[in-house]
Image 1 (cartoon, rainbow over the protein chains, first blue to last red):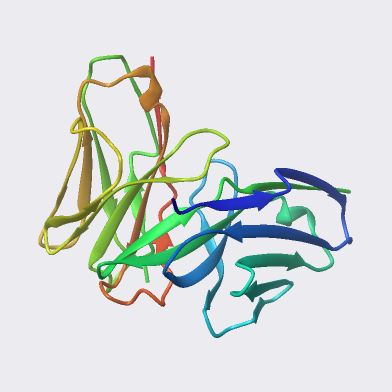
Image 2: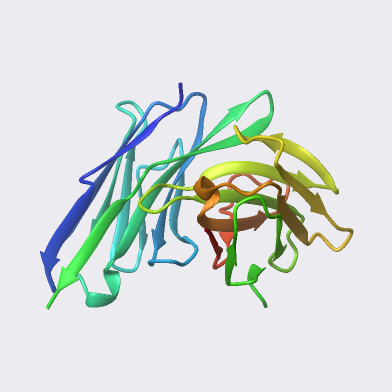
Length: 114
Length: 114
């Protein structure tokens, strides 16, 4: 069964500090992995998308890494800001008989405090 | 360039009623997917529409049905509402076949069933 597990479930850090969120997956065959940021009550917004051959991808203060061998990804946030408070969702895309199937993690709830 | 739009933003219904949610995809996108997101959970895939046909379906009962129009906009219909249908309903769009590109989510419709 395809699964995406994220850790921690929730995280509270001080403004200006760095943090790393983790994503482990068991999706096969693998197509790509995406990180989304979701503000409360809003739709997810894409941060990064990585295919099998990509190890790292950055988007401003967000840097995602991918280890396709161990099926792990991380999202590193540098110099956190209050606006980074949100849920971060890891989504893994697999292909089944030509159809793309997305498997969503339950997200990490990040709270930045001043 | 308008992104994905959804209407209404909020909706309150009672058990047994029927509801219709609407989605307009991002300009240039032809594929629309619908998701249900319960509080504190990741989005769950309901179904996907392309060329006015349902192409994929998640584990949702027949009470959940949809439609796609020639202009690529889409509707999600839910019949015989249950309390458990209360959730944020997300619409996402992309270009069919371009699975290496991320899909864009709308802001969602918050449905409350009393």
